[in-house]
Length: 218
Image 1: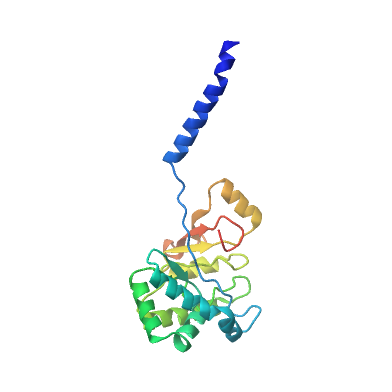
Image 2: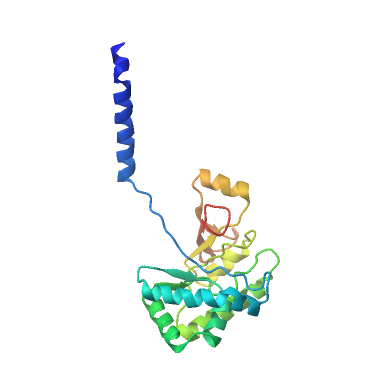
């Protein structure tokens, strides 16, 4: 019977080894605060701008300027452009230029909106992307490097192809079929290189990451 007396000790040693092993391999957590404000959902664009959108950019610029360890990514250009043209002070504009230069503020996608993928024609997708990118290049001399297509309900093969041709380095999505996401979580398949069609070339494929949760926050 005496070996049984060692069981609590052995259990403690196994637990201690497990905890030490976990301590040696910490989990890296990335927190990415981002703007996601639908351009025309429950309210008009102007109503949304007055109610909350303008305050988002005003407060973000202030907080990033005060706390240098913080970062933020801005998505839709429609609200930012309205804030920039009609609300931002000269001081805030200088702060935005500095934040972009120090990479504490970054624009992703850079289109006027985060376009829907189910009913939107590709001509409109290209047009709204071109308008947003044109504003960013003319104003700041920059081009977005990443997409942030996390809220459209479903994903089409057209969008990653378009974004690859637009020069994006990577494509981030979220809302896909629940069963498919569950399967991808289990098989660790949330990251992959997406080629919209086998007939397309490697220049039209893009590294894609799927957020692991079921909304546009992960």
